[in-house]
Image (cartoon, rainbow, N blue to C red; front, side):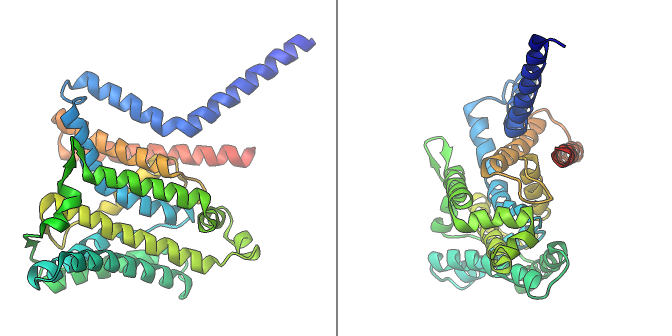
Length: 331
């Protein structure tokens, strides 16, 4: 084979690799753009200012849960309790502010603290009791938190929250929902946290190889406790936004929300095997789910069929992750 032919072949291989890197890095964003284009063609109401802002508002709760969920998944774990923690957090806030008439700031503090406290408990159960996988500990706290939410309120909703509590989920800055502005601020913070801080680097290291991380001097237990505490805190913050949207709290709030959060993280390019995933990919994953649901509603697709479509998207995202891991191992 001539030198020119070899050089041409090498150039083709390099271009192919570059193309694959681009698809791997920007795949979720390309998927969001294509999905938006298709829905714009199918429904003239889709790409309007009002509907786009509605999507931003609808995606806020899942986006907040998903960024909290990203951290356990980066460590090759999972947090099944976030939906129940959301419910318990807002019910306790309702008891403090509505039933007991205390200051809204105290209610907000209670909401965030309850979520963080149960997240800390998840971390303690995982690290100190040495349970084999966070699936077990968070499955347990999922049921405990939901049960407490039902018990303390007698399964009754609480309504009539003060304006200060409703602000995040209710107000707009121009056409932009305050809740989505909060999402952007939170995601910028987490981007800095995961890419510029020592703890953020430790989270990726633990997901990549926990034993190697431990041998290199990283306090794995401490980092995991921080990870699950943050995940619980974000469930409380998502609950605060939800209360602002509907001006009520009910003990069955957040039912199955953990599944949407997991889906957003995986669709955004994270791996169940840990060590792989980005903040902005997670946001794109949350937007894909919100856009898909909104578009299917505009097309008058039944809720049952919507569940089927989103389930298929999740399976496809996991399958892509499996293929990516296989290629990585071969390389």
